[in-house]
Image 1 (spheres, rainbow, N blue to C red):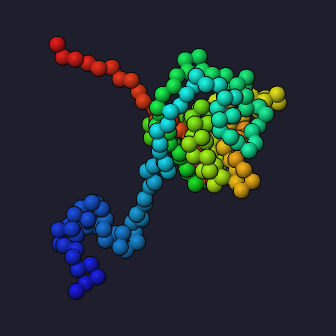
Image 2: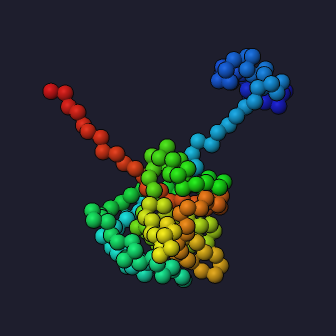
Length: 196
């Protein structure tokens, strides 16, 4: 009895066809053809949360019960959107495991049907998952604040055994491979056509 005793001849043929034929399969075995695998999705977690953009950042920061908050994360620096709403939204946490620019992060989110998370998304996430930020930084790239020195900064959850922190990170820098990025599902409204 062979190592793969229940493997059938039909499965052999299906696998060879899937690889691209007999010559490709032989090339792989000889090492003259390289098999390349690609990670298709960088999403490590999804969840649906109530995001309330009608509440001020100050209110949501207080509700988040952080151990430390940057003095610049205020409602004055992050005002409510003019058309802010309250509703359930699907959020996803992306992890790339390598250094990435903000533009590259956004491009990968776009491919998966997500858009950059807001500070309201980040604060709702921190309330729902208060200890996750102790394991790795979680960044929301949508809302940018420019400091007095004209550096652009974005909100980031971080922490450790010493507590939970809400800080502002520099947008211009590349992001470390340890960072996670929060995103919101991008639902597109498509027109509906009827036959008459």
